[in-house]
Length: 118
Image 1 (cartoon, rainbow, N blue to C red):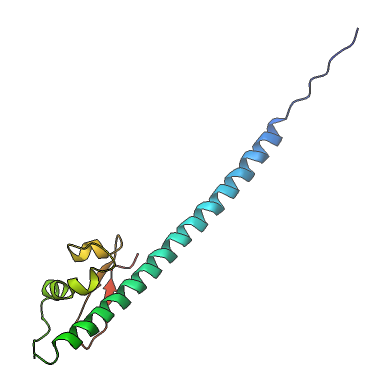
Image 2: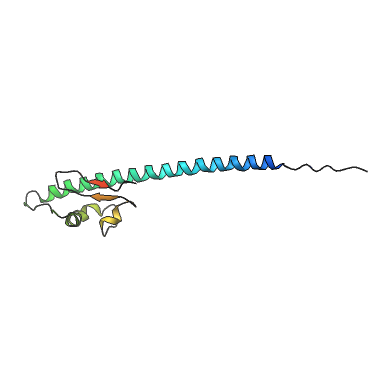
């Protein structure tokens, strides 16, 4: 008669594998968060460049007629909307902004900026 010996994994081995998987998952989550922050930063930089380009185009179109650039931020967005809408369908500045970031168009001779950076 043969005796079958069943060999399984010990509790220490199972715990070691679980800890290793946890460490690997933690690293993946950290890399994902870092990548998200980098993509938001890249988007914000691109959006600010688009706003500044729109301001320059508005100035080229309106400089000869003497139309003043609006002093109220919401009015600034309204006059720049035709120049910004070619890239996205926008109805307000919040459609342009990434979550948690606020853009400021500023005066015509001051570059656009942002606040509430995460």
